[in-house]
Image 1 (cartoon, rainbow, N blue to C red):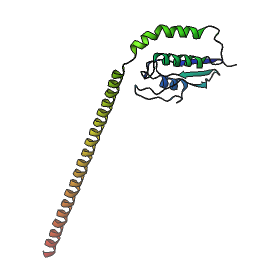
Image 2 (image 1 turned 90 degrees about the vertical axis):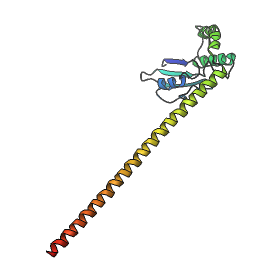
Image 3 (image 1 turned 60 degrees about the horizontal axis):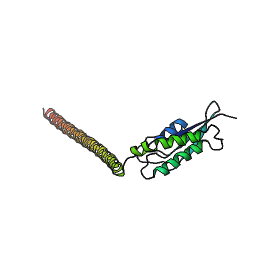
Image 4 (image 1 turned 180 degrees about the vertical axis):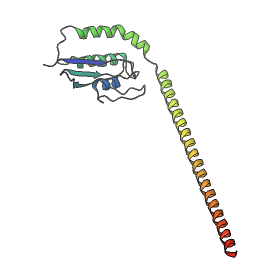
Length: 184
């Protein structure tokens, strides 16, 4: 039987767990987003076979600091993620109880680190403002490029007009010279 390598991605909301899982698996298995907003709502397991025949299983989890859930709900999600890993396997070494103990010890620390809804909204607004500013800057760049192209077109047209005038003048001069030569 092929050996299995299990990885659970645990951490704060918006730190890139899903993206990391995708990189580990070498494919887009988990939905991800480049912003601080939570994308993952429940634990999800994906897997693939490594070149040496081992099975790689990755469990992506919702953020432990998701302010929309109570600490108990977050803890339950954490434990469900661990259960996903040991699914069908006996917990002979007591790993789940050790993880449960670790979770309880760190519970207070995680709760302290959870961002208050007001702060979360401030961060979201800051991101929106940055995106708006970025779009405005891009619009300004495009406007400048368009104006430059219009100036170049006008210049090219001006050059063509001047060249036509020059050719017409030369043509007139040639006609005058021909007429003059014919009279002589």
